[in-house]
Length: 337
Ligand code: NCD
Image 1 (spheres, rainbow, N blue to C red):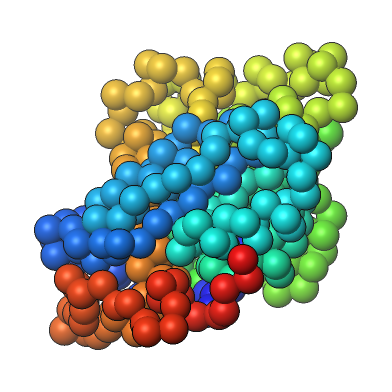
Image 2: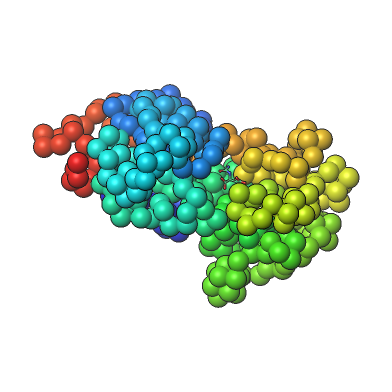
């Protein structure tokens, strides 16, 4: 049984296959419409979410499965003091796979250590957000045709933005990637990413404060929101929140084929006038999030049912629900109810 805590839990080849599977799902949705019949996805969200939770749910429904879960800590027994470890042990009795989002770094990892079903980290505090990274990679690969040889500008709250942390981890595997890290001094990328990820792997990067100084050279501009909920005081947030506002005027200097990504939600950092620019792909990106989560659910839940080869993607047991004689739970690992 496998979990997904970080994008690096997938080898480069597995990641490639997963993105290919996601593209096949996009092209042939009906082929996958019954692949997860009889399976359940639990979404355990202790933090607000629109895209991540609903795209996970849409993904499982598109696969013919069903969903259950909670959308806030207040509506779960966390409000009564239950630990994540206990909650996941219970969820393991109700569902076949679980996506969890929690404000504390490492919470998903703790859950995975107590779970008898695959656990997907849907965001743990300011740490990682691997399924957003899968979404970002699928968007870039589908629309740009490659993941290597790109100059990527990451702009905004690079300190607390977990999507940025996960994306850097994943992209350093591709040759010819260069990062321009654009942030105010107080929201620079954490030291461990600068030292242990970028410098250690000899990845070229620059740190700048002004978007205008970088935009000209970018193939991808990845905008992020200032993460209000992670600030210790509101005054600092208010000072930082409108540091970057991407407008049509600023875009005038960018390459014709630069792509603008944003994990969303957007606050003020991209002016709505930019939405109509063909380079703005953040709403398309949200759609890719469904295909890639479908691919991930299939990969974790039914690893032996998918074969990706240069000839195409084969789904080996699209309609059959496997019920083992000893357990109704078809994922590996014994029940711990
Ligand atoms: C991101 C997150 O939750 O980290 N949103 C998302 O999942 N699409 C980015 C954010 O909240 O700013």
